[in-house]
Image (tube, rainbow over all chains, first blue to last red; front, top):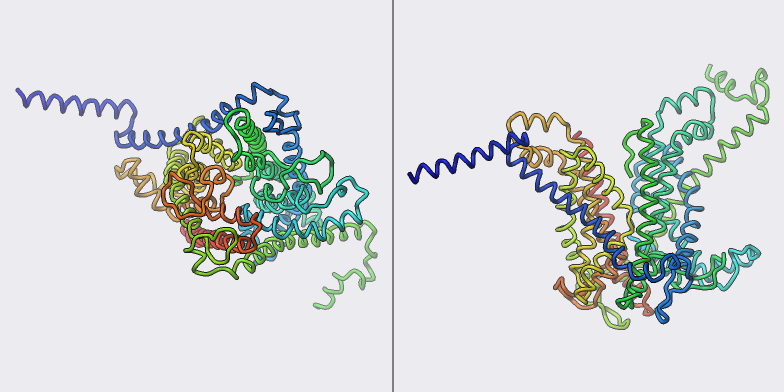
Length: 332
Length: 300
């Protein structure tokens, strides 16, 4: 009798296994494997959503207290408990704009060199070098900026600019070495490899036949690039540029080390010190007392998060629209 | 014969060919400008990198000695000392980050390449791609808010969590890319022999793609070893030797950051050496990656 029961229990177990197998069309071990994998994937998804939720929840006090005036108030003043991010947003946009103005032409032409003019033997080393530049920790670029670039700007670069181009609004004001100019230059160095890498990848997807057809018609190399390569890769390159912009907008360490971290009277001067959204976080979290101060620091982070999310979504949409037109294998 | 060909090419000495028109000269001029500018800017980009590397290496190598790896930092700019705790801390932090980042990244990649289909898979893939573009300080902020603020102390643990989240997308993306390179026939052969999906993945697909996966992991570890911003508000840094992960922990990048801004010349000198060690780490990782991917590309 006892035996009978255990046998029937075995039957139940086997039958339920069989049911699971037929129901899902897979073996139980596979289900376990899929289940564990899915569980870990959901942890990843939950983490990302968790980051967004935590940022919103903890910046809620300032969001409800200041509302949109947070974006329009020039003071970040823990003493009077009034917070706004106007100088930070200005600093972020101004330094990133500076970096893009210089990094786009240099990066694009360097990528054209890498794709079209580079001697075959130099291609791999060149790609290796740009990848390496992209991999250098930002604190090292910051060290370079703080210990070499800023002192040089103070002694030589900025006085020269003021003397010769001082009539422009960009080169007026007190010379301090650290400031918008140093931060912009450091950012240029940081986004350059990204622009080179994406432009190169995108331009390599242009069909060889298209280049050769132009060459066969007697076009010069410039004309081939202007009329066959650039129109085809325009969208992808734009995507790369926006991706680089996102990187510049969110960069923290290198900028924090050379931008001076002091708001000055708002002007177009590149010599003025300032701060960015990320450098506010890096500088203020230490003093941030729970309450509005802490919340303001986190809202600065939330703004960076939203800005970089938007730029990234835009960039990836542009680059993947290249794939729909037949260019394969570009993933950035 | 050869002389006539070259003469014909040279329009100046060919009496039958009219001299180049203004438009032709303009075209050639534009072309020349492009080539010169492109070469110049490529040289500039490489030049900046070489200058930066040489600057750090030449300044850093003067103070590179055994003490640097073992000794504690000296207080207030006294000579001597090293970055022992920082190096130890970086190793611990990268280890902690790997515990979180590698399994999550790896299984995300397995999901995406082996059986992720439809909307969820696309959403996960976009999420992973977007995650790589988020500034790392955001993850530092996250770990600070959920771990440091409630515990009321900076800790290596919170730093490891922040770095771990940063590792996930890097590991996931590189691993997914190499898993996709494994031919479908290999999977089908394994399945047709009666192997389960799990067995196929772990005994056939992953071994075939192993060098590529290792590459991704090494890259991700090198990336987070060079992170500073998320550690500022989590691991925070300390000048004491400390192996407890629930207390403030030093990291190479944090020490380089603090010493770069230091008013004492001896500390600035050590910052150079710290930067040099970081660059060496990145170089070693890059060459390992080159070596592995070289072998990997030959295989398929």
